[in-house]
Length: 318
Ligand code: GLU
Image (cartoon, rainbow, N blue to C red):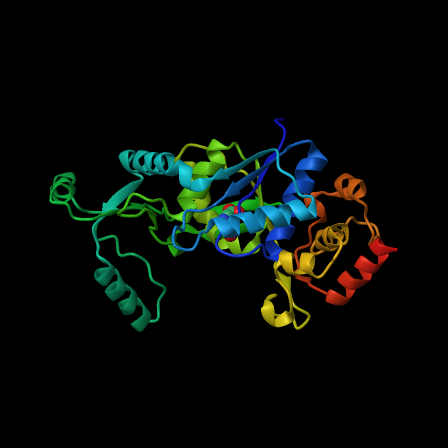
């Protein structure tokens, strides 16, 4: 078996959130535990919201927590040509089609679906365009996107955290993979990069579960096996709602500014949704690495308990 390759793939559109830091930590722990590689990939394709300042803050936060990487940082924006080539290959193989629908037409379709109380699904009107007609429109300079043909069959995977998860292809849309300016949509860029970087395990937040069937369909279209997926449960505030600024500081940098010890923060983050299977709270780095497994990640959401974090910081201080 080849040694695992995992990645942390933050979008530099904001500060380093504790949830992101925990995802990074789990990837790093998994790589260290297995003797694999941890790759850092900055997903800076959202040109309007990505900034160098955010990238710097993310790198600083990881550095402070002692989370290292073996390769990278790679910048997703540098692979735009490969993303486009992958989309065009899928198109050339008849697994996608050119779509000339304008935003207004799509909005109208969406409004119609809403009025009928059904979920929006692109009505495939461009799927039946003849090659000659497609060429004519291309030549005339009409903007077009590339849409993936989503089959009707079931898409299922064995999630390393949640067990079997399945979606029905017929409930999913023919989604756009390449915009009219030839930039890739998130799902394609991620799959293209994960294939190129030979990623074996995708460990990320479970807010990405709904993207996974589309990504698996893209792996298939590109003739590749998909990696193991491990979707890590959300972090909640003490009131059971998704952790947000209402609950207090959510940026790693805030804890750094408050004088929290990085080792305490790292220990605390590791136990947010992972358990070593022994009743232990204080885990030095080498212990964490030794005990970390994907099996130890819990299915249920973790609660961010500031009192516990402060207690842990006290333990590390003494
Ligand atoms: N860039 C994505 C995010 O920040 C993560 C993509 C992934 O892990 O697949 O949510």
